[in-house]
Every structure is written in C-alpha cells, then in structure tokens.
Length: 169
Image (cartoon, rainbow, N blue to C red):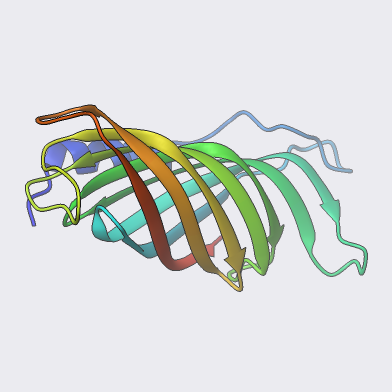
C-alpha cells in the first residue's frame, strides 16, 4: 500500500483543524459544535479505507419521542486506503447519539484519486461523481456513480459502492 505522507497529512489537517463557524445558537447562546466522525469503509475503487470527517450542524432539533437530537448537517469526510484516497462533501441528516449514530442519510459529491492498485478502475486516475448513503446503527451503505476526470485511457463512468462502520464524538 503506497500512500504519500503529504497526502495523508493534508487530509488529517483539513479534517482535524479547529472549526470556529457554527450554524445555529442553542438556548444558552453558545453555538453547536461540530460532530467528528471516524470509521472504516470497504469501497468499490479504493478498497479498505480509513476515514475521518466532520458534521457541521445547520439545524438541530429533537425527534418526535425526544430521544435523539436530529441534525441537518454539512458532511465532509476524507479517507485513505490501499487503492487510493477519497474526499466527500454534501448535505446529510443524522440522529445524534454518542458514540453510535442511530440513523441518517446523505447526498455527497465525491472526488477519488486512485493509486497504483485500485479495484476495478484505472490506476493513477481522478474520478468525480455523486453518492447517496444510508446509516443505520453506525453502519453505512453508499451507492453512486463517478466519471473519470483525469488519468490514462478513455473517460469512462463507473458505478461505485461502499459499506462500512462509522462512530462519532
């Protein structure tokens, strides 16, 4: 598995950097803090991938039974694996329970850069696409499509999928 140290460092810094902007005030006048997530995913192109990310809340509220906080969030995740790296960003809806995320869904823009040994796609290529995902009890399933934006060979469109586990704090 070849992962450049610079790429891994950039992903780590972008995700773990302090976030000062908060979307909504709570009752005490302080803003809601972002929720950080981490997990492991098996992806159709990048294979086994470790991911970290942040959910930045736009709107928070309680569910009907007053059990979970519901969050309409901006989600940004980045992952590095043996087949390459991926970055996703987009809107998501999650029920917040720590450390388990009980349920949620998202619609994400994805950018994937494959390494020398991806699964089912061209090596050393960049793919741009979209993905929709469902979360249930911290297990996440995502389906999408991606189009090759750069790299050797013809510009093809591929079907993507991933399945994994995510926890938050």
